Amino acid sequence: MKRYKLYLIGMLIVPWFSMPLIGKRTFKKFFLSSLSINLLALGESFIAHKKKLFWFYKRLHPKFLGDIPLIFGPFIVGSLWIFKFTYGHFFRYMVTNITVDSFFVYIVMDWFKKIGYGPLIRLKKYQFSFIFFIKAVVLYGLQKTIEKKQNH
Image (cartoon, rainbow, N blue to C red):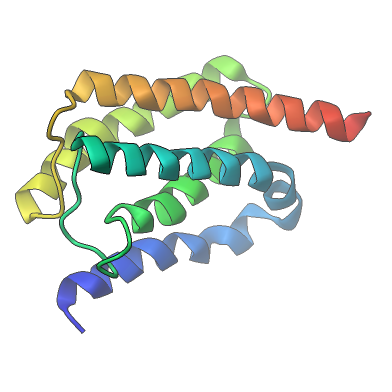
């Protein structure tokens, strides 16, 4: 197996090792909304791939998108952790999301480009950040809606 595939598998699996620390109740409470926003991110990736907005060269399988390990690894697990510590405090939630997303967009994406994993192509960093901002607001609203329906 090629070395980069081991890294991608690690990127996909390692974040899930933190799940016992998050707690069963928190997982059950936030998983549906986190999964939903990550499925939206998957749709976004199909569009981005087709329009060449950003590109991930390395893939687990030739038919998979290159950012699958990111979406179903650190992004979904990160959403759960951010909710655990900030849900109910919208301002804190948004500041945390903006901080984490900015780190990803301005630091990690540069590193991904440097190591040959993938760059932004037709998308500027501020545009990519704005997409993350919108997804954070949608995710919070989705969780509020799910919670409201469960309480009625």
